[in-house]
Image (cartoon, rainbow, N blue to C red; front, side, top):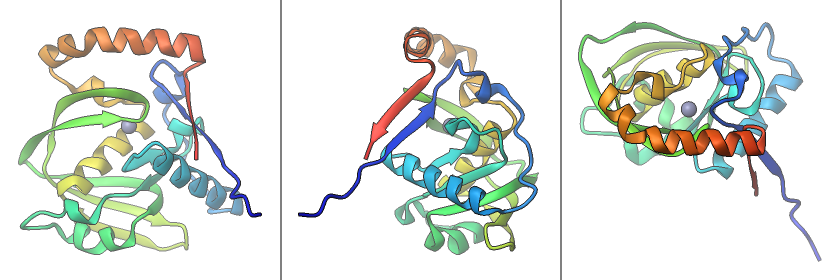
Length: 197
Ligand code: ZN
């Protein structure tokens, strides 16, 4: 009889200092970095996420993975969505946002490190995104839609920011009780949540 071995994935939750630390650049894509990217893709999927940054698995490195669903593409997709959505899941190193659009939009965000809490966040509608790929290439695209949103959210993680830093005072008041609950959960579970998949 064959058994598929299950893996245990951990994501660090709000309150863990690693989520408030500015992450270090990835100097070289070593086998260890590839393995970390694989683990992060596993964790992102185990927790049903669409993006994950290395600090969320406890590693203060500028490495991010995405798994944006192809059906998130809208009526006038950005060049980045057309190019990158077929390549999901995608791991990138040292990602940067070069420019942001003046146009902004509002959308509810959530975060695997802030589980079960959602709030509206205003962000630029499109960004010009540049990043290194694991095979040594560089990608640069204008990205909008869910991808553009997720890029901004994940890159915030690399600078020690969480989406709850960007919500209005009113929205913050609405989620304040849940945030306190999450803080207590963190204190009890060492700011870790675990999934076995
Ligand atoms: Zn997040």
